[in-house]
Image (cartoon, rainbow, N blue to C red; front, side):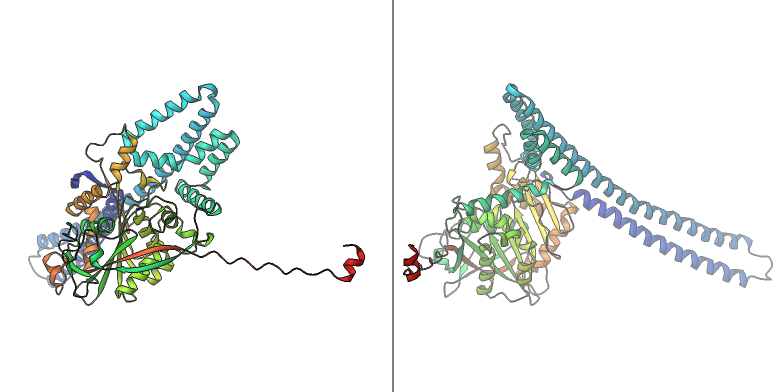
Length: 530
């Protein structure tokens, strides 16, 4: 079980700098209040001076005490204002230094990757020995900073390494591009994914399809609902009650990151393959909130009909470039919109998306897509084990992004996501028994959803102030603590749950044009010997 002290926030420094900056503003307000006190004391001194004119003996000591109090307020206000200005300047200077250091580190890593590629190129017959040494250096990096960060750096600077290996001209061009900012590591995976999808479409391995949606009755949920005909329920469905018509179920949940992410586990285990879970929450203030739980990759076939196969993953990672492919729509996005509409969501109802692995990629892409957000009012996403870089969320959306130091899947974007007030990345320490010597087992263990559920529970229990804003936004979104929220007042929220299954149905092949009719030769053709 992950404990709160095993978590760290990639945004902790940003949060601390924000606290310093806010403190500077607050100190400035105090300085202003001291200046008002100074003015009041000066007014008192002036009134006393007018009142004691002609009085004998003159109250010199009392008047001097008031003047000293005025001067003390003046000195204190100036010192406090200077302190506030220094605090704000320190926060800004530190932020600028961090940005500069990050850029220098990026350039240093790009140069190092280019140098390593050049070493391999020039090694000649010693290339295997050089490659072994580089692999050993990579393993040391894994043990020192984790597979996620080491893999992220290797992937982000792979073009420079490979181009240097292939030739000095290409390597120099890659290095210059890095210095000028023409190429950024965060774009590496995106460009590779777009190219891979184009190649697979061109080879006929991926074909366009249409979406078929159906509502899954609780009797078909896995494990079966306790009121259903198929046997006892598993732990995920034990607390649910089926409605009289058998079309949905109701239950309650805590307004926590752990609870909402656990429903993505249900999308793997309770829902049939290629399904999402939709929860309707009445938060007690007259508004309805919807939670959509997405699974991760369920089928490693290329184009199987399951929306969470390899084609579905590629659709998620290239959603911003969908117009460049034969499949113009992202079927998971279409499934979410169709499911919400069928469940009764009204325009403007607020929506929370959760997802693990590929489901998290879909959730982040939906939250970044202005066209999707125009139709679905996404307010928050909770994702785990998903690459997060280059997800520019639409305004007003908050993200909680759980990653593990050894989960290389979360590093596939090639760079850290930008930490902002709306995007919170939480990094957990190695799982118990993690062995860096076995990279395959290490990556698999780090990526498991069960581990991330432990991380989510630790996040909920953590007193780290960097997490407070995200937890408050989740509680407010779900209506926890609202006066009329009923169950929410007791620390839980009630919901109605439905499951929707989507299938990628191949489009029928376009009909072949009819053959052109044969045209009999004309007399002129006969005469010309044609």
